[in-house]
Length: 68
Image (cartoon, rainbow, N blue to C red; front, side, top):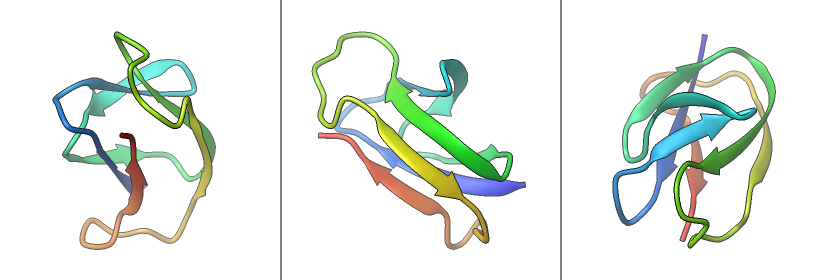
């Protein structure tokens, strides 16, 4: 398993490849590989989506994604 940390100014549901992954501002578990990340709800954030290859992460060093 791999780890991502998705930050946003408020708590929102994180979508990975269109499926619910968890909440923003928490370390989340995900399978290794290429994923597209977005947030659920209003599209009041940038970038619109983040595409990333998630690999070689740890709970203490997750892949970081920031939405503004």
